[in-house]
Length: 136
Image (cartoon, rainbow, N blue to C red; front, side):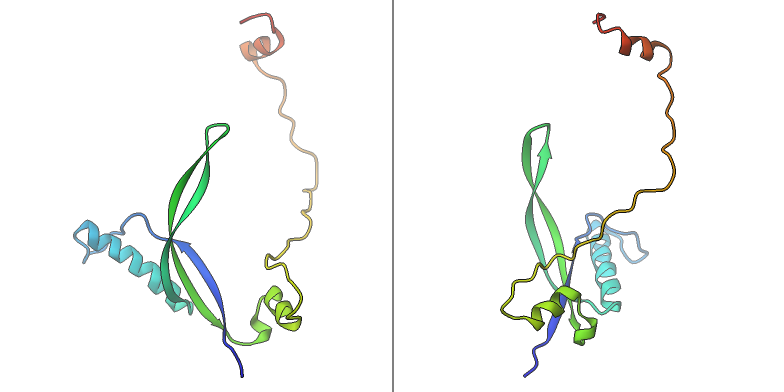
C-alpha cells in the first residue's frame, strides 16, 4: 500500500485589493487579489487547503513584545516519487524509527574577497563632538 505524500506552501494573504476593470468595489478588488494569488499558485500545481490566522510575537520597544495576528493561506501539492522529495523527507522514510531534523541546514558562508572600503574620518562639528566628552 502506497501513501501519497504532500509538500506544503504557506503564503501571507493579500492585505489590499488589486485594480481590475471588472472590480468596482473594495470587496471586488480584494476578491480579485485573492483569486489572482490562488490561480497563480494553482498553475504551479498547488492546491488550496485552508486559510489560518496565527499569532506572531513581535518586538515592541527595547525589551517588550506584542502579539499580532497574521492571515495565511495554506496550499499543498502531491510529491510524485522519492526522487522528487526533499532530502529530509526521504531520510525519514528510509529510517522510520530515527528522528530526523526537518529543517535543511545551509553550509558555511563564504567571506567576500577583498578589503572593506574605508569610511574616513568624521567631518566638521561631528568630529569635535565625538572627541570632546566634557560638552553636554
